[in-house]
Image 1 (cartoon, rainbow, N blue to C red):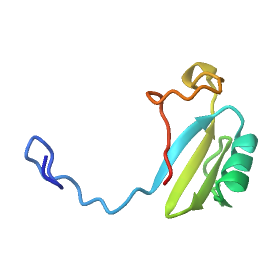
Image 2: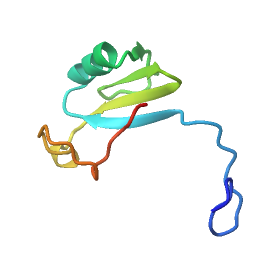
Image 3: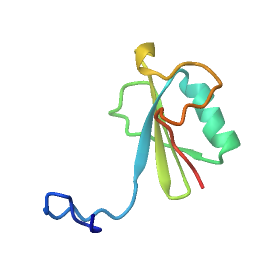
Image 4: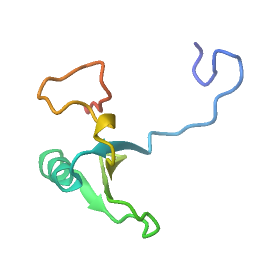
Length: 92
């Protein structure tokens, strides 16, 4: 596939970069601790119109939006086994 082209031949929108990823989490406060203390992300202010539990973090040119899950069935299992076929984020 050519860069900037979809397989259908239509031109793709002019994307510049990845802005953010959004992650459902079991515990927003524990997730904030991990992303700030372990990975060095910085907590940034969220728009006040967002009236649900969550947090925005930023560093390394990318944002991470954490959202408190209302449905545990939508979350990965709570095991320490890494499944490479599950949703994930990879940093280099």
